[in-house]
Image (cartoon, rainbow over all chains, first blue to last red; front, side, top):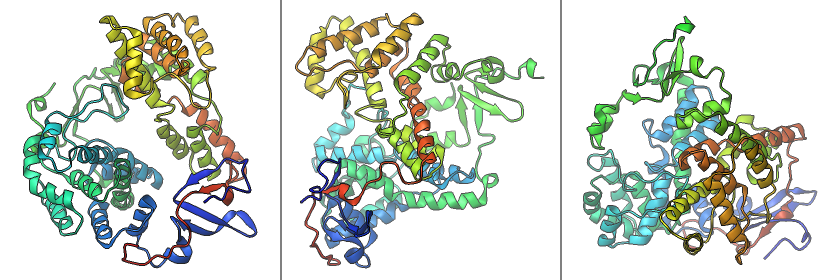
Length: 276
Length: 279
């Protein structure tokens, strides 16, 4: 269906997600908003959980009970990577300097978008799942001989197996706890397989499974596309970054690491006489 | 050089690096001085133009000519103050919603890392020229390289342009480049040879400014990444006017959209949410 009949000459935004009906006195204000066919303010509000609504926005249909619980569990697990995480540290740097709150989130998103523990890692790992599925030999092959595009991209090349921590030792307890918890739900064939073969994969990569790896397997079980997984992962990790940024804004820069004695300049011309 | 290079990735490496960052790049000595790549900034760079400093910061090399060429590229090629352009429109939308200038410009700048224009195109173009040049030096034919590129990727970075067929920026940039003794190097020659070939194919792709800029920079000796880094701020010149213009107009008036401008093609709007069910 289309709302375009009265304004055929004007450019439009085409969408399966959102429909609006105008207020009678103002075509620039919506009286009713529909998300994938549901009246957002007349029906969904009060009935739908936030996690179900996020699902609906991306999938255009509701999750079943198991899918909603899996998605919510993942959201809880990812919501705060903690103040040592690179993306949260980026947000806190905004906080301690008194930067705009928006910039704190931009910082968290930008730093948390990368190959190391970031959303690009999730995107790539979901692609790996699409290619390898539950085929252990395929995983061994892709880990030991990762695909390479001979063209340069704006993204740096991976320096480690995506989904695994290059600087890890054993698989950390919270990662295993999340994997174990997610495996209690129906519809988690990929996660079950990952749990059963974690040690094999860790052996191939010589590094332990990490949160981004569990997240990618979860997104694959939930049938999200790699680009959906990439962007949802960014969203789900923001609450902690925001909270830590605001907390550090109040505490201030003087009680936040500056690494004052942590930098060694190895090419230093020394003081120049003309400044004296 | 330091001892950490012998430590493999893992907790041992992180332990070695905790509160211990070794760098040749630079540092501030508060109240005294600052250093970039082994040079005192006040001493070595006070008289540099900003882009000359940037060339040094990114490449570690000094080149007034490269800096001047980049400056001209930014003015001629990537600073159109038109709020309809996708990245500029973000800056302008920031103006119309009264966000801060820095947020608006940085959002527009981040978005400039686009596929149909901007940084992916630029980086793709210089990478293509470097790859082709290497293959040609080994005896490959240009026709075969282009054919393989199209077959494998269905795109040749730097050729063709959304919304237009030709590129009005090519001639003025080449005119400027020649005025400072640039524009006659092997990469520029290659870029136009590819353009000549593609414009005669059924694709009718014309050379666009990305290929020309990439070729000029490759002839200046820039690597793919050096060119990419030095291009990353190239669009902001067009964004500031768009932001300023929008913030000087009444708020919310930049290309407002009435509800009828949404062309909904989704599910029928008669659903009722049943909590907890797979409906």
